[in-house]
Image (cartoon, rainbow over all chains, first blue to last red; front, top):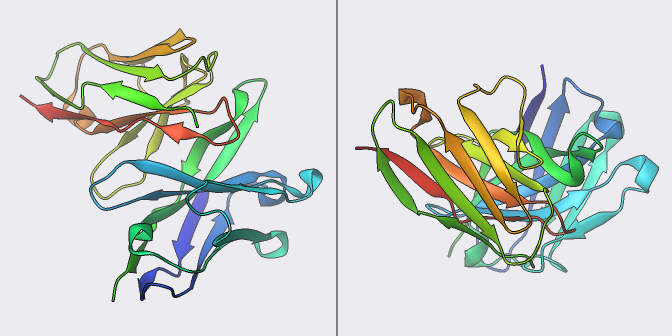
Amino acid sequence: EVQLVESGGGLVQPGGSLRLSCAASGFTFSDSYMDWVRQAPGKGLEWVGRSRNKANTYTTEYAASVKGRFTISRDDSKNSLYLQMNSLKTEDTAVYYCARSVGGHDYGGLGVLDYWGQGTLVTVSS
Amino acid sequence: DIQMTQSPSTLSASVGDRVTITCRASQSISSWLAWYQQKPGKAPNLLIYKASSLQSGVPSRFSGSGSGTEFTLTISSLQPDDFATYYCQQYNSYSPTFGQGTKVEIK
């Protein structure tokens, strides 16, 4: 059974930092692309960024709204994905989800999110 | 970024109704569109990918169609478990984007 479990959320002041973790199981994490998606309270879904796998040199991509402030990393030996968030703003308040990102022939392009974690809430407030 | 616009934003329907949700892209995305269902307090759940392919385990009353810039999600006979918010998502570009969501409410 595929499982994604996020942790690390909490209350942080504007300008502060926080590191989220996502523990994966039930699939070959090292072969997988992984995304972070967030959802502000009462709002829609916003893609945050992506980590490619080792075969693609672990390259990352980010939404313009977080580029330069957020960093995605992973530890394949621990089946874990991370989101380091710096210079946090009140508008970063959201539930943050990690999700497995799939693509290829069956899906067409890359970026179908077939498994999601339960999310972790980040609140940026003074 | 490619903008995704869903309509309507809210839809009131009864059990057994046929329901259609529309998603429009600001530029052509071929068939690289997915649909998700989200219930309150829960993570989104993948329903449809590549515009019309049903994800494993999703009931056959859900179907998707379209290509280019206009897409639809149809629920052939609405069930009590289907009252939720639905999101479309394009994955044609390196920066995926979602529609604003359509909430399906009980009439």
